[in-house]
Image (cartoon, rainbow, N blue to C red; front, top):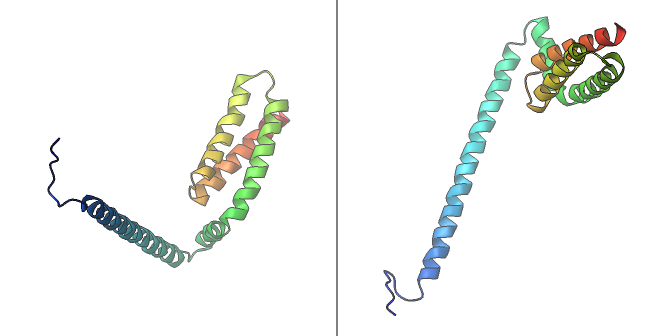
Length: 138
């Protein structure tokens, strides 16, 4: 059996190891470059948001963004419990009432999961809570 080789015997494994090491270093360099660009863009976005936080309304949304994790934990508790109670007691026999409860609740939870801006999360969560209370009361 004839072996076709471009390299001398015994050097195939060495070249494979060298190629793997070089590819690994290139991947790490590429990942570091991508992560560094993301960090720089994020810091630039934060600085731009801080510059525009001059008015009272913008300061409120900037504060909500800064306290995102605590607010999201509270919203999850309020939306989840109120939506479940409203669905079980308020929407027994009507599909329209159930859909009025389910759609805003699930959309607000999806926005939380997607790490959407706090302005949209708080707005849709407020709508969900108002609809849950309306269905529960009436």
